[in-house]
Figure 1 (cartoon, rainbow over the protein chains, first blue to last red):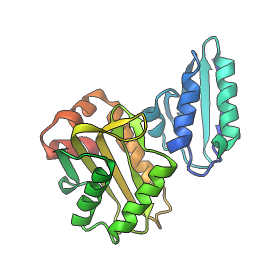
Figure 2: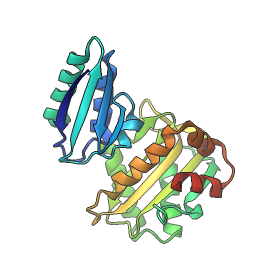
Figure 3: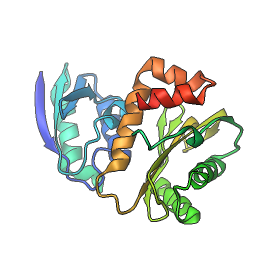
Figure 4: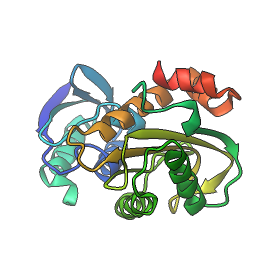
Length: 87
Length: 145
């Protein structure tokens, strides 16, 4: 299991379009990817799940991945977040 | 959440033709419940938000929301359509949750309401009840539980 901590810096948080982009990026990978925040963990591939976390600007989320392309998955998600989802 | 939604803010199995009619219905319910200061302003803000980010989230669920100067008191509206309509380009909607929050709310209340609704919809039993129940009271209790 590999994991990274990511700080959400974009304006709306992990919500709406950013959340949709995050889920789509996660779905491109085979690995099981889990997002944890505020004591809760959900699949990175479920938009509804991600929305339950209510991640706002400035929050730090932990993303863990397990599987063959885990590293690539974490790299892709890290890049998306560090680019502020292209905002 | 307790005052956010009441039976007055729930409409079941209404026949509406398109997204504009649904957003109009949401505004009407909020207006009738005395939660809007400016109906048109609220509608404009919902459209502006939709233009930025369509709120269809799959599984025939849409969550149009706005933080708006047209809103007096926060509210959550649930409109269940008689038949699904096109919402975004590639999304249909039958279960529509409208979230309205005053624009001076700095507490991210709309995100908390959204998170709470999403949580309920992830539970298959609650989702089924929301999809099928004929009792507004039952749906209200499920959403507030």
